Image 1 (cartoon, helix red, strand yellow):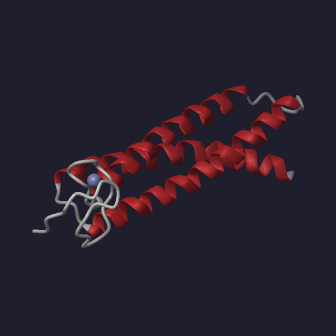
Image 2 (cartoon, rainbow, N blue to C red):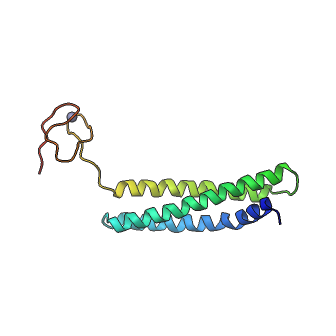
Image 3 (cartoon, rainbow, N blue to C red):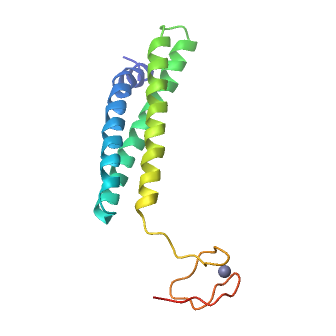
Amino acid sequence: MSFIQRIAEGAKSVGSRARDLGEIAGDKARDLTRKSSDLIEVTKLKHELRKMEKEMENNLAGIGALYYQNQQDREDTGDELSRLIESTSQLEIEMKDLEEQIKDMQPRPAVCPDCGSELQENTKFCSNCGRKIEHQ
Ligand SMILES: [Zn+2]
């Protein structure tokens, strides 16, 4: 089996695996929104995200290999290609979803109530508009 064929073959199985993983991560993410924002949970979500990024890389390599085979007329890979592309865009949606969840769970920096600029920690005045900042 050639190098290209190996990547293409790998991609065929990766496509379905990535989708399963995406669905699992999506379920987990939905679960987590109901719980308190916890650093451990954010770490878990980030770990899922890394795994999905890896799958995405494999998918994209696979799409490249299948497309190449297609163009070379070595094999009709049209079905595999569309399946993999569909699975990859599904993965992309799940990853965006996860990224949103992670962003929501992370503590936001304090902002100036007047101008909305981000505030330095323990600053007494807004560096943008000069408003006095009260600390609780
Ligand atoms: Zn300000």
